[in-house]
Length: 284
Image (cartoon, rainbow, N blue to C red):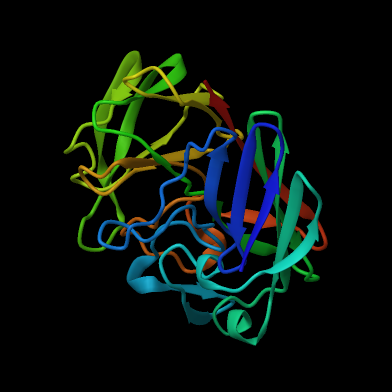
């Protein structure tokens, strides 16, 4: 089922399955969000939880026990419940159940709230640790926006950034990096820029990145919510780009003894709350 919110500027739809954005339409009928063509990429805006990316052999250990977890976790392929809804805001909740506890031994609430503020969409992710011990998790957003080859991603500040290199067979981080920006701001979306998978950055100074279209219309200002990692990805040559703020990252080939040792893992103490928010402003 799809639920909608709207205001004078935008209408936004979210599916209960995966709590996934399925539409962001302007008041004059322009669709900003990739529509999930199955022959290219079926996704639109998956929520990545409780891991981001891939684990070594899709496995991790916690308290001496081994668990199996699929790429990007289970939240994106699980039914959520509508928690509340008003004209311009709605919230969905995912909590532990027998299936999640079998692969992720933590009790949790993950509440995602979508709010329209004029021409902006704000998406807040709230993780609640319901256990009496520390909870370990990663969390990421993965919205795909319609674009064309030749459009440009522009950081608001000059950046010197290298992209993490990914092993194309195992989807794990390699020790090598790829220089991308040298005291500059612009990344042009070419047909081959994603031939070696996503560009994954950390150490970004900018709080915002802009998706600038060649026609200088329908541009997007994207606030990354101070996430420590940013992924940029699409299927090569496809007419969309995913702007992905991540609180977590893929495994490397270095095996860890416990999920608490995983790179960029978040540790949430008992009964505490973790909040992460991204925002997209849709510019004429």
